[in-house]
Image 1 (tube, one colour):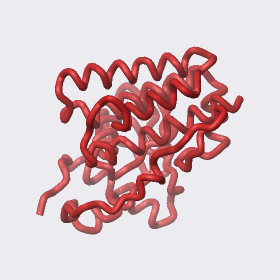
Image 2: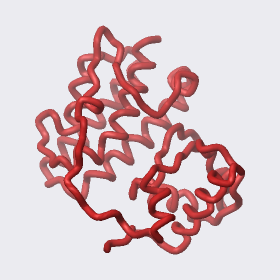
Image 3: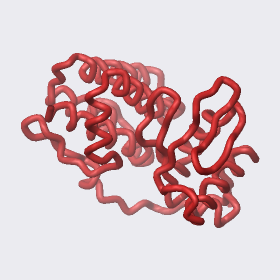
Image 4: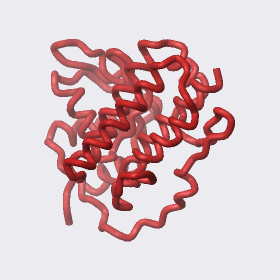
Length: 224
């Protein structure tokens, strides 16, 4: 059975987080890292070395953690069910099976500038982000970087160029001050592989958490 692509430090990090959450020592939504140049800390869990940020990103990449609000030097992470299962099963991956997916839960629609979407960020967090240009920029850069990182190894050069251009155009819409709902709908559709870039079901499922959060941000921004 395959194992997750993790270092010993990354495995220890996830074990520590899971233990603290299960033991009630920290909240399920975990404020993470101080951003010090010499390392970082997880509030309620402990101090970690200079690799903390990279270790967290790898756990997100392996879908063992989900990242929510990220700003300069701070982040909120939550353990996914895969994360709990990985710790329980000594980081053995579950056997591959054909996913049963309700795509309707993912393909969110936009009506009159409002995105109909269920997702990770609550209203207070969304308002905080969209009302602070610096925070919005940080969140947008983080989500789009993770999004691009999740697909770039599987896209041919021409498709990757189109994908990168769509990300750039989406960021321009967010930062324009007057985003166009129809353009955001088109671009998120492209990034979710429902547009002119072909993607496998596996790729579609991989990008959906990031697309969902981007659309939630768009919803809050357009409703101001």
